[in-house]
Amino acid sequence: MPQFEKFIEPSEFVKLANHDLSIWKDIVGQRITEKKFGDGTIIKIEHNFAILVQFDTPFVSLLTNKITDVQQIAPIAFENGRVTRLRIPLNLQEKLQEAEQQKRLQQEVAEQKRTEAKTEKIRRQHEKLWEIQEQERSFDVERQKLKIEHKEQLKDFCSQRNITTVIHFTRIQNLQNILEKGLLDRHSLENSPRAQEFFFNDPARYDECREANCMSISFPNYRMFYKLSHSNQDDWIILLLKSDVIWKLDCAFSLENASSKHALRVPLEKRRQISQFEKMFSDYNHVKRQSLGIPDYYTTNPQAEVLIFELISSSYIKEVHFYTLAAMQRWIMEHPGSYPQKMVYNQTFFSPRSDWEYWRADNSNTPPPPEKIEILR
Image 1 (cartoon, rainbow, N blue to C red):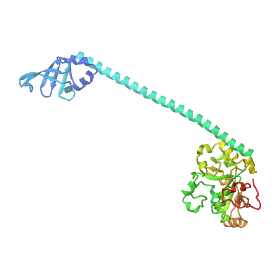
Image 2 (image 1 turned 180 degrees about the horizontal axis):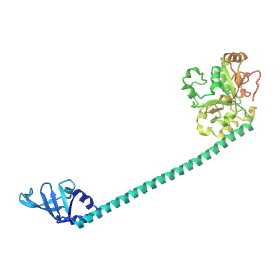
Image 3 (image 1 turned 120 degrees about the vertical axis):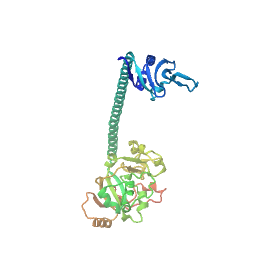
Image 4 (image 1 turned 30 degrees about the vertical axis):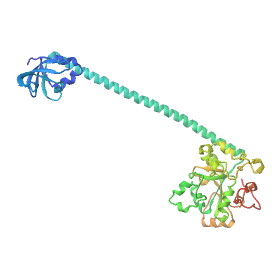
């Protein structure tokens, strides 16, 4: 075989020739070896790239049943192993090398473009992420600013109306746990391993806020308290908490009992607003606040409530009020220890509010008037 010609793998030729279809015509006159027909010479490339080969050894054609030495071979024969050898001239070798280089170059360019596209995509993602983070930081700053403003507004309003106390009543059996762990919400207590040890005021919690504690401002919701406690008031205590809970903890405000239909119609987010807190001290429906003769620090409706959606630390508790001296002394004896809270025997908060007569007409659960009402602030 002349030095300028050599045999190559047919499949390699096809890979390169497919990048430059003109190369196919350059193999006319070249020698090939086909598994079935043996050696032969390529005599023509058809327009559909079918290859006509004249083989050295004649054979009987299956189509004509005649002896012939010419057979058409499909290009796929170069890939599936039927054509085992292909000889090519020097000029074609150079073309194939160029085609191979071109293929490599195209692959490199394609890879570079993919890398650039990937890099650009990552850059844009990082840029977008940075923008989102900047927006979130901006929103956080704004939220924090609004939160601080909200707290200051609540604090200022409490100061204006001399609101210093928030009230909560509960069973005396709960007191030690409250002083040790603070006031937990109903949901947390019910899911506690010690759930059976706790005594709940309202079994149903129709206010739909089991994650909150119910409080009153300056004076208990005496109408509900009397209904629960009148049969044995010694079993109950009243906690006086610092009004700080109003602006330091997450609170919602109801103009009336939080389980009422009217209260439930107001979304919780709206009930968290300062405007809702202020309305607790405004005229209530047909009730003119001025006609009640109550202090500024009382809510207009005696059943107005504050819902607190956080753990209330016992450090907020200022005083614990017992109904009788005997009940207080008995509890202290059964629970020896030092408590920072003041233990008080005082029936003021076990009695109705000073405007009880106005609200008594539509509620049989209002207690009789006390001989003396002492208002503690």
